Image 1 (cartoon, rainbow, N blue to C red):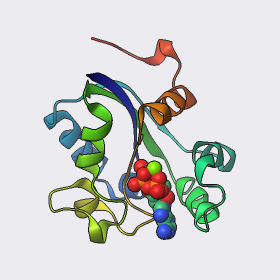
Image 2 (cartoon, rainbow, N blue to C red; image 1 turned 180 degrees about the vertical axis):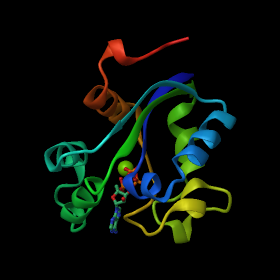
Image 3 (tube, rainbow, N blue to C red; image 1 turned 180 degrees about the horizontal axis):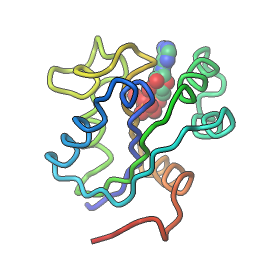
Length: 140
Ligand code: ATP
Ligand code: MG
């Protein structure tokens, strides 16, 4: 089934200069990029985006990390896009991520882990409009 998912190339990956390599993997995997924006999140924007984690011990640190520099926010479309993008990302902890995944190859730590992906249709339905209006999307 064709799905849309929100992807973020996180500040650590943009700072390292590997955003292009990650975009290349996205294109090679056959996703259609419907929208893209380079943005530096405010503390409020990061906190709202990750509000689901507000009770977790790493929440404050995660929100600080997400504001450290610009990130590249994307909407990806494709068959089974939510699961396929998370497969390409790899496990949250790069030490547990499978060989060939983005996090295995580019993440620095369980926090600075290079990329984000929506984890369900419900989270994609929250996350895509968090960053993009319908007019920002370029379907084809
Ligand atoms: P994301 O939601 O960013 O795609 P994920 O779904 O793999 O990642 P979550 O459990 O949703 O993982 O955690 C959100 C983010 O919080 C992680 O990607 C990571 O940046 C950070 N994080 C998760 N667990 C930890 C931890 N134990 N210590 C520090 N940071 C963490
Ligand atoms: Mg998550």
